[in-house]
Amino acid sequence: MNTVAAPPADYALEPAPSESVRTDVVEYGMRRVLVTVAVILGAVVEIIDSTIVNVALPDIQGNVGASQDQGAFIVTGYIVANVVVIPLSPWLQQRFGRKQYFFASIAIFTAASIMCGLSHDLWTLVFWRVVQGAGGGGLLSQAQAILRETYPVSQQGMAQGIFALGAIVGPTVGPVMGGLITDNASWQWCFFVNVPIGIVAATLTLLFLRNPEAPRATPLDGVGLALLALGLGSLQYVLDQGQEKDWFGNDVIVQLSMAATVALVGFVCWELFFAKRPVVDLTILRYQTVWAGSLLGLVLGITLLGSLITLPQYAQGPLGFTATLSGELILVCAVPVMLFTQLGARLASSGRLDPRIQIGFGFLCISASNWLLAGVTTPVSSFWTFVPSLALGGVGLSQVFVPLSLAIFGSVPPDEVPKASAMFNLARQLGGSIATAVLLTLISVSTATHQTLLAAEVELSRPVIRDFIAPRGSMSKSALATLRGLVGTQATVLAYADANRASALVTLLLTPLVLVLKKPSRQANVVAE
Image (cartoon, rainbow, N blue to C red; front, side, top):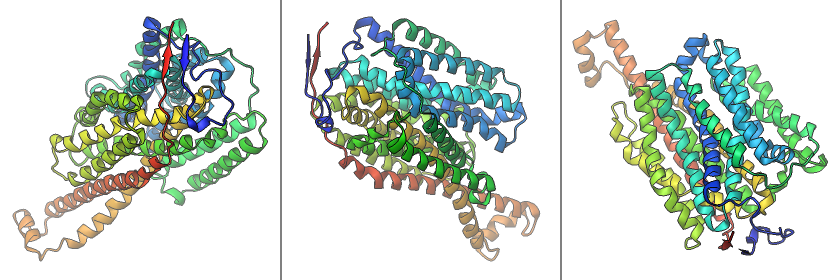
């Protein structure tokens, strides 16, 4: 016998579903545990792979004979395929069945991982990275939706807390694994490490996951799919390669920027006004909490993935950290996440605390963390210098992901949860891409600016400069080279501090979006076998 609470206010005017949770897929006992393990393994391996390769990229480039510009395609190819597939996931699940699609995604991802490790030239590796990204795109958004349906409403906080541990800790574990593999093994193991995890996840999925409904032969919106692929693919390339290619000083970047603009505007118009069965149902954004939550997801992607790009570069550059130590620095942020995520999940699902307060508190902690990081960014910072600020950021992340997920998924009918999940995860992915492009550009421009300002202060008549170069010979080449090196290092350090402050300000300025979220109604769901 099922006792189901009234649906949240966000969709009170929609046709009422027969049940607030489709109890034909709510699992119990060991079956639920095994489904959860399968889903989390699939999601975590995809998340880790998106960051583990970044640390090993210099080694990979050297082994496949690629320049730095060419090597960027190894990362870009994966992300482009990923962001194109994520919004397609609801249609693919509906067309082929949730179980079949999730299993196929794991199988494709695992097989492509093997082929990536066996690749001996750049373009073969790039091809298999694209295939791997296409498989991975179906894992993240579907994993969250599957957990939503597998657990009753009374346990949604726990379910999303489990997913949050993977979604937040995964990107921080990736650099650690990448550093250990780079320092102690060959780069191929960055891909081979996925294989046993993928086999276990695929086996459990095939044996225990069930479809919430029978697959339906829904016609494919070919025009919408083509516009989406062209728009997101072009946008992702521009964001990833713009800084390396001098942005709009490069003809390819200009052309792809125009293509992205035209294709995405065309896609929105086509899906809203002309497509009979749109490949991506943009009407999910009619829910206030979904569009506001997706914007906050964009901020979450900026703060989380942006720091994962800039902090390792700073640590391995001016500070001279090893790849392993740099990865361990990122791991500091993950410890509070592991400690406090379930606490945040219980608070969010209990109804005793407005989740909007949690989300706002979390973003404020993240903003403060980035601002503090800017203050300790110096040429002589040690590992422990960063611990307080990174730990504060981890506390903030632990209080954002679960309450935000529950607010979004609680605002839509159950059959639209996959669409809301895809939109939220796409926003996070795009947030990370935007952060990477903007922050790297900011660091480059800021470095040049600081270098010019610092160089103007270097005058041989100043006592401190004279005392520095006197032992080396006032006009010797070694003295001037040393001085230039110090100026360059200090300019780079100041630029990274600027990037941290920018992240802090963006997070702070967009935090008031939590006020747009609707307060979820407290739901009680008692499910008896």
